[in-house]
Image (tube, rainbow, N blue to C red; front, side, top):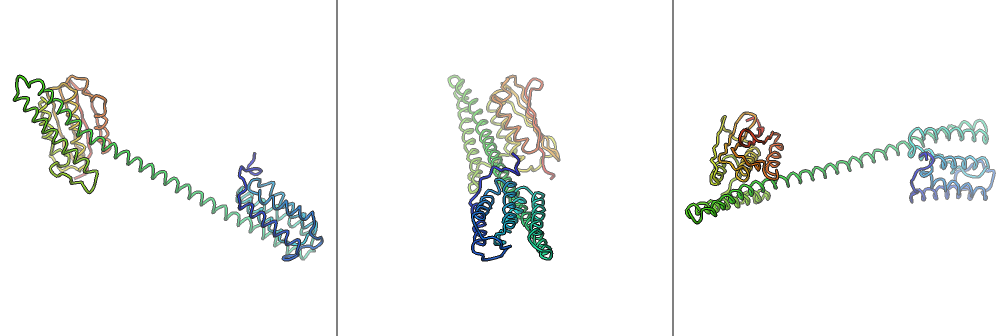
Amino acid sequence: MNAAWFRDRRPSRYDLALGLVTGGVIAFNGITGIGLGGVDLRRFDVVGALLVAAVTAATILRRRYPVPTAVTNLTCMLLWFLLGFYGRVILIVPIIVCVTLTIVLGRWSGILAGLLTIGFGTGTIRLLFSDHRFVDYSVIAVLLALSSVAFGEAIRYNLAWRKVMTERVAQLERERDAEAARLVNEERLRIAYEVHDVIAHSIASISVQAGVASHVIDRRPEKAKESLDAIKQTSTEALGELRSVLGALRSQDANLDERHPAASLRRLPELTRMAEAAGLHATVTVLGEPATLPAAVELAAYRIVQEALTNVVRHAHASKVAIQLTYRSDALGITVEDDGSGSGSFGGSGSGLAGMRERARTLGGTFDAGRVGGGFQVACQLPVESR
């Protein structure tokens, strides 16, 4: 149904209050004769009571049935004057009509209601009053209708502005919550990658050393002892680094254990020693002039090399691994290539490669991994700030 005729909005307690007050004031004015006078041709009777009841009901329902109640109110007002009931308080009715239609249906509907009110009002005035009073009352009717429409438009604009502001605040709150959730998720992923890189590399090295010890413990006890010593050293370093990672999550404990410095390329020899302890021949090549890198780039580069070596130890069945760092003014290039033949070079479930790719992507870099020649290669470019 057309919104001008019916709106699915039940009357509120404010509508009820306005309707009762309007009807009560009109009835009081008509019964007692106190207040603004009218044509004074007829005493208040049952017909007057019916008109007041109709005005009251129409005012209460005005926002649910905008046009029907507006027609009812204006008709009742005209009949009130034509039948000669006392009092001009009923002139509040066209004010309510114009204001309501402007707010509910918009500016042009309010203007149309104002014009109709002016037309019917001046016509009634012409029938009831002499020429000199007709001009005065007509001017009053015009000003009353125009001011009612203007007042309704001001209220409509204020309501629309408040609605826009409310929606904007709600949108900002949703965006804030979404951004907070995104940051929390990113931090969870970062922590997960950090812990994964620390644990996976150490466990892989420990697993290899334990296998060697188990294999040679009867024939070469000294070799088994070396492997067990390597396991002890690796586990101690892993625990220390894990404590550093977890300690960094608490600002007051950021320097929880200074014996285990933050992960950076300065600790690259530790990674190669672990790889060699697992039976790999590891080489490191540095191209370009080494320079101080941003902390985020240092950490990402170290973790990428660490995870790549972990994959080689666990999956590649390789004998050699070559690490190459290329320092440029705009980026750091990292390449880790092995000569393995195992299909596991792809990192088992793929979480390791996903972590390396995510680290590079977060810094705006590129990442690529795949088989090359007779082995597997991990290559990435990490952009750095101008130094």
